[in-house]
Image (tube, rainbow, N blue to C red; front, side, top):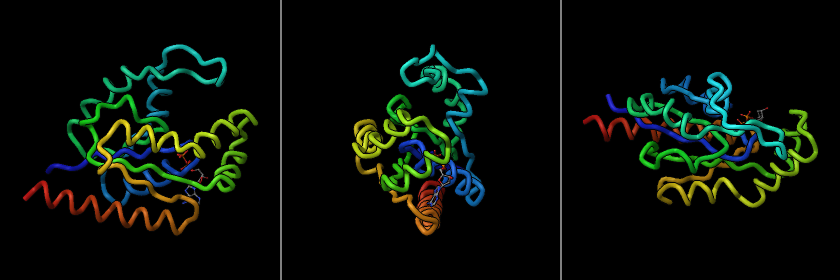
Length: 172
Ligand code: DAT
């Protein structure tokens, strides 16, 4: 059976992991967190002193994921999207969160003031939405509000319906 590949992207803290895990458990698709994958496989290429974090080795991440993506039925979660091959994804969701809500979520994570401000700016300037529309066909890129629990439920319902329809359309 053919199954779709879905990309969940957006600023850190918008709710990609929460949505991705829940979607995976309800749809049977496989959830992959690229940050975790990189950490486990040490898929890094140097260290960013300014942002105080390791630099992702994008080529190795792509190599690592290629086989699973080819099989289909994967939900990929990452706060970046311009280095994945365009052909990988059948749909791209960019989660969006209001600044005040996002600020509180990131504060709870204990982010430094600089990291907090950088991420809030990233959301204000819709960096990930623009990256997504520049990297994928606009008609497959969708923004989803992700402020409150009802948003999460709505997003899950909508995406599950989309998955069901996609599977019907591609397996008949
Ligand atoms: P991300 O994976 O994008 O970094 P996350 O899934 O870890 O984000 O979520 C960050 C926090 O926000 C976490 O405490 C769960 C909470 N959260 C996620 N989606 C939410 C929603 N729709 N309503 C309320 N809280 C949400």
